[in-house]
Image (cartoon, rainbow, N blue to C red; front, side, top):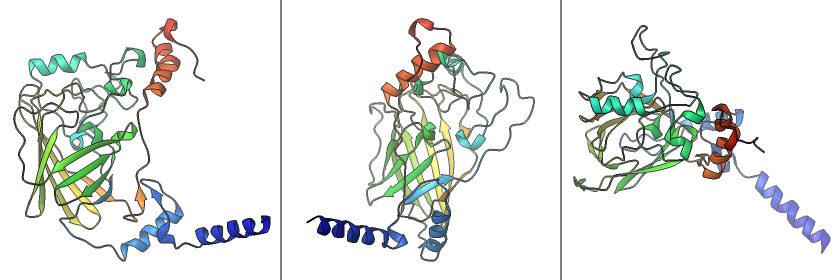
Length: 297
């Protein structure tokens, strides 16, 4: 019996390790010699359909450095939000909202950055990032069906979010309940995939620097798929309660993470118990709140 069990394990192991390379699974964004080899091999069989957005897409463009001497910019660190396009002037309501936001992430502008215990970035409470912040520096998987395109967003490494874009011809009523990622509908106009969304929860920030939005925000997106491994996006935010004119973004580019179909997103969740432990062990200590601080395990 013992010999038969060992023999069974040996055979199963031989089958597992003799599977073709196509059965291997790779994590999105990870670089390795094996993945590079598989990606190169996948190019030979990659099919191109400009109306097929499916796959895992990675940011392949970064915003240019901001002009020097812009007042109020702080250390001038460009944001991936809107492809680095500077925002238009804020309204009085928008300015009040912006000032009330206290960024604390290491990627935020140093001039505005608060010590973690004094910050109020929603991610500190594991609140959803919301859209478009969940797209910033993110890996995004597009799952396409006849009735919708589902975006699975890595949320800049903080949490997975799921954004359905309905393509079945429906419209968005004006009285929809607000959602973190809003309500989105899309359609093809020639070579462009047009997405319009509204109904956003104004508690979310647009990015880690604390740019605000209201529940009146509407987003217009134009996606193009010019070749088999590239998606381009131009986004426009229209929020007259917060900004004095539309915020027109720069073109952002995404590249297909190959091999397509064998690359998977990693699991990323913002776990409240982990976040609370971090607050006690890091944020509260940094803010001098010794009463509610203790070393991390």
